Length: 325
Ligand code: PSU
Ligand code: MN
Image 1 (cartoon, protein in one colour):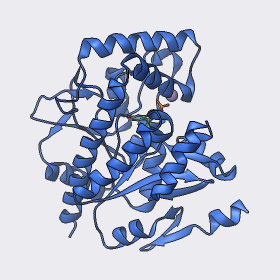
Image 2 (image 1 turned 60 degrees about the vertical axis):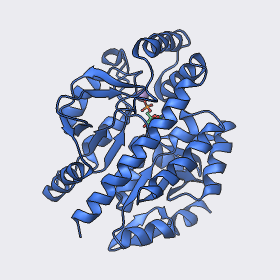
Image 3 (image 1 turned 90 degrees about the vertical axis):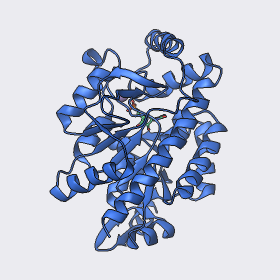
Image 4 (image 1 turned 30 degrees about the horizontal axis):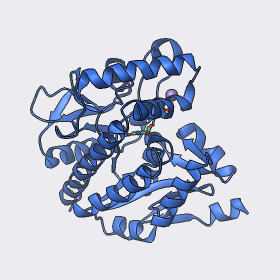
């Protein structure tokens, strides 16, 4: 019975009672206060094509280990919220996603996914929730969800932004996805109280996912892993209970040309409108269109900057665990 199996996954880490399944490796690491970096799985189930998605998922775990932290990929397996997937679970998730059997899970989808024993890919929003329950403070991904173009009328604003306003987890990414209205996304994050800092010298703008500079000013900048770790420690010690967004411009060698990608994004948005795509299907649709129109260049770029973000997140997590010793 599902209810029994979910209940049997109520675990403890330290004094916390968790309604989720945390792998032995992650539980031991957290109890020993070692650096852990969470990873989402919507990017596996809905963000990247097969088989690049599996390749990416396994590579990023290795990148985090190479940089001194332990990776914790999150997902819903048969309705069970899991932190720390096994390789075969990652492969299974990708196989199921290929057959359209994986739900894309943000906060509103969690209860249904558990109750119906579904497979679920975790978005930034639900990864933050699972991470916080497990006691993981740092999370790495590709790009943030945000206010969609025309969002002032459609109200299509990613649940990622709400979560960043209410859950004290740090998201390390390459900025809001370029398919979005980046100025409005930044306004929304300010309203919700999410700290936003971009890696680089003072004045470095928010990156645009595939590009290094979205043209939008970043509220803050940071230049070292230690600086980022201090922001997290101080905000959490103060008890802010809101999230942190660390944006990392994609490395020059992998970033795409602004004009090239912006034309393609514009076309993809028009195609989505013409096909009547909305709601949670919109982001996966746009990413697929862009992948096909760039003959896979966007996928290659996406995987490279996820790796870059993982390296930075692992180093921030390591600095944070040193600060706490
Ligand atoms: N980053 C990527 N690819 C993705 C996503 C992020 O490089 O597919 C996913 C994340 O899981 C993010 C979600 O939380 O897209 C946002 O979806 P929406 O716009 O529907 O909230
Ligand atoms: Mn949406």
